[in-house]
Amino acid sequence: MNAADLGLPVDVPSTALFTDQYELTMLQAALRAGTADRRSVFEVFTRRLPEGRRYGVLAGVGRVLDAVENFRFDPAVLGFLRERGIVDEPTLEWLARYRFSGDIWGYPEGEVYFPGSPVLRVEGSFAECVLLETVILSILNHDSAIAAAASRMSAAAGGRRLIEMGARRTHELAAVAASRAAYVGGFDSTSDLAAGFRYGIPTVGTSAHAFTLLHDSERDAFRAQVETLGRGTTLLVDTYDVAEAVRTAVEIAGPELGAVRIDSGDLLLVAHRVRAQLDELGARGTRIVVTSDLDEYAIASLAAAPVDAYGVGTQLVTGSGHPTCSMVYKLVARAASADLKAPLVPVAKKSVGGKASVGGRKWAARRPDADGVAEAEVVGTGPVPPELADHQLLVELVKGGDVVAREPLEAARSRHIAALGALPMSAIQLSRGEPVLPTEYL
Image (cartoon, rainbow, N blue to C red; front, side, top):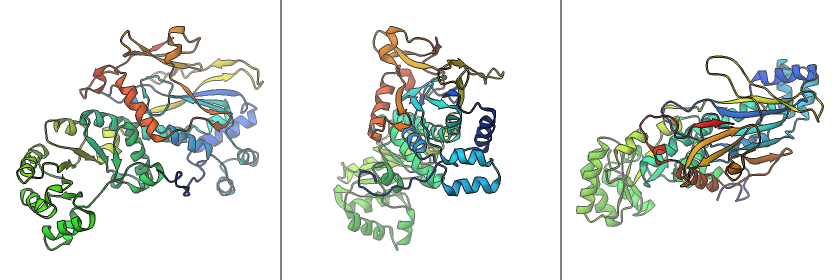
């Protein structure tokens, strides 16, 4: 249950200044030129996946819908723009009335994507669409990077539980978004209470080394924790001597001890030793949680270890080496004139150096093979082939300015599991390789 479910207030400030100045100066120039009202189509896509990655994970769609809904130029924001002289008075008057009234289509949250996948399509007047570029990219690039890392870690964990614990390694607001994205990508819980409050994600946490060091002895610290939190708590056993700590932990909590956490050393070796010791002491049901700068490769290397859960921080909230997805927001079609009935004309950037784009309003479908396994990401601008009609990926998210596709976070999490399961098995390999599906253009 989250804050909204409880009827509690959730801070939803204006998102209008989560933008770059040139979005507003383009608007001013377009208003003067008489082109601001031309019907336009913008698309979000990435030209390539991070090196070595085989698929991307779309996350942040729900946050994008919130951002669009709260993109309002209130008096304080307008006063700031006026004081700085960023735009003129006619433009300020236009901004004061701004409400996005167009349509947005996109891949549903949790879906996988590939180079060229039109993960979001924004349609409306040029003026109302162009203002949303920066905030949409900010959210999708960050959240999708975290979700992709989380998905790889989840695959490496092989069903063992994953705890997101990276709040102290990133900006305080980014930490909340990272927890949400990690949950979509397969993590089971978070240490961040703000994420639990805002999004209903399960939260966990017991104690750090400081709690042990506070007490006169490790035994005193363990006793205080067990007496307060119960025998099912998790005791941190690597402050001093691991073997002695495990022995003390079982003496105090008994075989009902919930778990022990190991945060340093050779995790593979230490985990085996701790498991053997716990079993000898009769604590066969006590779980082992490991932390300490883990990433998907470290998690995979512990597949043979008797580990029950992993806690991941730094590498997760930084996208495990790829903190952005390099998504872009490009104008792909615009009306031939300001006439509402004017036909759409495909437009595209033609620059060299790998930055060219494909013009035209696009659809996307994932073609399955005879066994139902995905074999290609198909992107087109013309009619959808009949055989792909039931495999289209874009869904309507906003219609006439109204959000029409809100869903629980659990739906995005479940969708990702299903989407990943429909890809070739090589998708979850950690070895470097090309995208698991080719992108075909029609």
